[in-house]
Every structure is written in C-alpha cells, then in structure tokens.
Image (tube, rainbow over all chains, first blue to last red; front, top):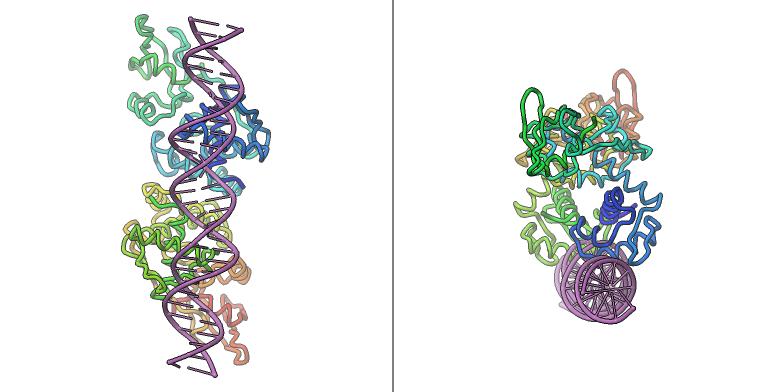
Amino acid sequence: MNTLAEENYLKSIYHLALSNENVSTNQLAALLKTKASSVTDMLKKLADKELINYTPYQGVNLTVAGEKIAVNIIRKHRLWEYFLVEKLSFKWDQVHDMAEEMEHISSNELINRLDKFMGFPKYDPHGDPIPDCNGLVKTHDLKPVSSITPNQSGTICGVRDHSTLFLQYLEKQSLTIGKTVEVVEIIEFDHSMILQMEGKRIQISREVANNLLIVL
Amino acid sequence: MNTLAEENYLKSIYHLALSNENVSTNQLAALLKTKASSVTDMLKKLADKELINYTPYQGVNLTVAGEKIAVNIIRKHRLWEYFLVEKLSFKWDQVHDMAEEMEHISSNELINRLDKFMGFPKYDPHGDPIPDCNGLVKTHDLKPVSSITPNQSGTICGVRDHSTLFLQYLEKQSLTIGKTVEVVEIIEFDHSMILQMEGKRIQISREVANNLLIVL
DNA sequence: TAAAAAATTTAGACTTGTCTAAAAAAGATG
DNA sequence: CATCTTTTTTAGACAAGTCTAAATTTTTTA
C-alpha cells in the first residue's frame, strides 16, 4: 500500500487535474500547504512507482494506476462525509476534516459495506458525485448561478468553494442542496443577484453566485 | 495531539499494565513487534511529555494524562468494532485490524455521536467493556471456563485470546458471547472439558478453556 | 532576443521512528 | 559473592518526508 503522504499527493493531483491538463509543482505546494522542493521530492517518488507521469519542469498527470488510487480515496472521503451527515447528524460544514482522516482507512471491504449500509448514495453532502466501487465517477454538468439570466431557474446541486465559511453562509440563507432558485434580477453595478426561493427573495454577491452550482 | 506511534505505545502500555504493575521494555517490544532499543527511545519521549513514569531499567506505568489518552483510544477501538459488527455485519474475527486503524481518527465529537448512534453499547463484539465518554471502564470480573468445576455453569462474556484463529474456532463451535455452558466433565489426563450447551455436548481443550471467559 | 522574473529542482540539513551492534545494568546461579 | 545470563540502554545509522538556500530552467517582458 501507499503512505498517507503519497495518498494525499495523488488525491491533490487528481483534484487539480480537473481544471488543468498538467498539474504544476507550485499548485500542488499551495494545495498541500508545503514547499515546492518537498513536492519535487515526492513527485520523483510517485514517478518511480509509476503512479504519475513526471517530466521535470513540465508538471505531472496521473497514470491509470495513480488515478485508480486517487479515485478510491475520493470515494472513501465522500462516503464517510455522507455517513457523518446522514447517520451522525453532522452539518455539511463540519465533516471535511474528519473525512480527511477517514479516507485513509485502508479496507475496501469496509467501504463497500458502508456504501451498501447507506443505500449506495450517488452524491455526498456537498453535491459531489461518489465514485462507485469500480471507480466510475458520474460527472454531472453543473453551472454557477452567475451564468444564468433573469427568469431562468435551477436546482442547487453543488458548490465550487468547499470552505466552512461559505458552507455556513449558504446554510444560513437556506441555499442548500436540492433547493430551486430563480434569478429575479442582476444588479448591473456589482453583478450581485436577487434570487427567488420558496417565496422569499435573497440577494447574493457575484462571489457567491460564482461558487453556487445548479442544474437548470 | 499525539502521533500514531505514541498512541500505539500508550495503548500497549495500558493493556500490559492490566496484568503487570510495571511494564517492561521487552514486553512492549514483543507486543509492538519492534526492538527494545526502539522502545527505549519512545519511552524517553513519552516521559518527556509526562504521559508515562519512566525510570531506566525499571519499566514504566502511565500517568493520569497518559491513561486518559490510552483509554480514549481503547474506547474508539471498541466502538468502531461494535459498529463494524452491528452495522456493517462483519464477523467478530474480522474487525480487529480495521479498528486498529479507525481508533486513530481524532475527533471526540465523532466518537461520541457514533456512541449515541449505536445506543451507547456497553461491550464490544468480544465482550470487552467500552469505556464511556468520561473514560470510565466497567471491568466486570470474568473467569476462565477452566476455573469452574463439573455441574457449574456460566455465561460466555469474553475471551482472553483475541486472535483470529481462536475467534473463528469459537464461532464454529457456536461458543459465542451470551451462550450459557455447563461443565459436564473434566478429563483428568489433559484437563480438557466436556461442556453442555443448548442440548449439545462440546469438548474443549484446556487451552480453549483457559481463554474462554464466563460469569457464573 | 537578451535580461528579468517566476517556477522548479538540487543540495544539504532536520525530525520521527526505526534498526543493529556494543555497552551497561540487573538478576540468576554456582 | 563473583560470574554468567538476561534485560535494557546507548551510540550511530537509515528511510520518509519535510525544510531553507542556492542553482537551474522556463517564461515573461522590454
């Protein structure tokens, strides 16, 4: 098996690779809160194990083997988050750090039974898709609220920013997964938006609108 | 917080201290599958942190602070074992290694909620008492089956040996927690015992009788 | 396109936890 | 009680993963 550090690098590379083709040393250093030199060391190690393709100065991407490991860690992370919210009644802003530890519990038998125990959930508490036991990830195509125009409506299905602060803000505004919102007006000055939801009007900043994801 | 290695040392010292007053370096090395020299190094570190009382060549025992940490790890271990058996349908011989990883998940809030979720169980799947959230451990006084005489009976409430092999053997013989057994006869030659349980007779060796625990 | 800036890697060091081999202390034995 | 054996500790080394500082490569910009 792989060490905790290796698993965290693979997971981070996977996440960054969703927006960039090749992941840079500095991006990884920032995400992992470490130094670029430390990242370089680890990249060599992961390349030796053939979990990543690494060309010095050119960034990295995951090999098939590396991606398999990364997806499995993400599967575990999201299933544990689901468990914490659905079974232990935690709020969606409280579960990330705990799941960060739990994702490294090694047994796949355990995680598959947990999956079954919870009824094979498809999405975690933040709306992110839970990879199945074969590593297949259903990527639904979400848009930020900021991309729709007045009179259009959509259902909240995810968030771009997963920070505690943002999640707590959304919770307070009742802007939670499953809610349907309609854009009433966009303020030209600052691109803030007035939404209609369950008969109430809510004003959100452009920043918020960019980080709140919906399906039409 | 403490490192994984530190937590494992504290837990091991706690377990060994149940039978010995002072725990020796070699005992720890054997239990932790490491070398005596490694143990000495760690003991110094734990003594610096005031988690153990350590006098060179004289063995160690836990301070109040050290015992608190050890009991909390054992609480987590046993609650996760209970979870794995009661919620995820694992057998009692399958859960030790998984719980060994899960006991290091740090959040106490998580473990207290898990405790509540499961209805505050008092004993783990092997009959060992689960410490409560204040660190109180109900130590019930169990005797090995080998200590009782013909015509006496008792209820199986625990095991001394927790090995997979022993647990699987007991499972096969239906000698599981909660069953009531009566001693029919003790074979003088090898001290093996013939038990009566649920209308059937079962013969167990002295070795087994020593490791199967009951209350009268 | 040459110099400046940014990104990345290398070199060397540090910490944690482990190891082997040797030294020292404690306990057992004649 | 002196010696032998066992236990424990010390000394020095190593692997993993990190760091700082310096060197190198790539990218940007004038």
